[in-house]
Image 1: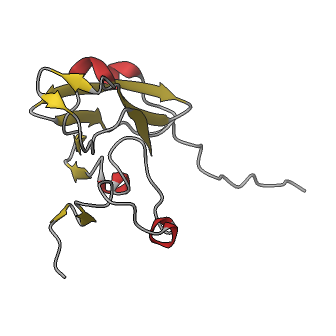
Image 2 (image 1 turned 180 degrees about the vertical axis):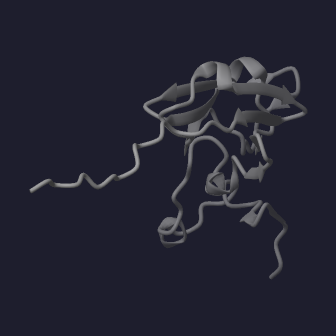
Image 3 (image 1 turned 180 degrees about the horizontal axis):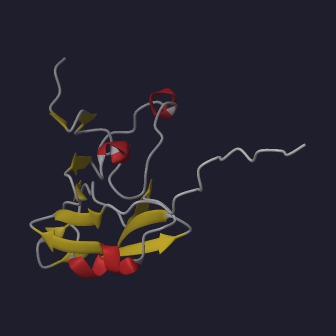
Length: 149
């Protein structure tokens, strides 16, 4: 029998009590169900003087996103909390696929960058980062010293 699906999941999974063997491969993520690994999709573009990074963060607000630069790693974190009220203005909840939770992703940008070298903008669910290219401190070239005698 064909059953309707939403995002590759059976719409009626939570409505009917299916046997427990169906839940064996379910590794439910608390933010967006078991497909959370497909989130925070990132595009990186290289230019002569900078990198441009676009990260998809659908459904998040600007104040739910944070950036941290530590030991050469830029970490993008996003946390969301949803109201767990069973009855609200929209009616009684019979299926809820959105969850509260947090996710993060880190990128190595180099030890030589500072917070001033990274610019961030958030519009329409996309976090756009501009990361300046800086040359790392150059290690002195190896030079041979002549021995007299």
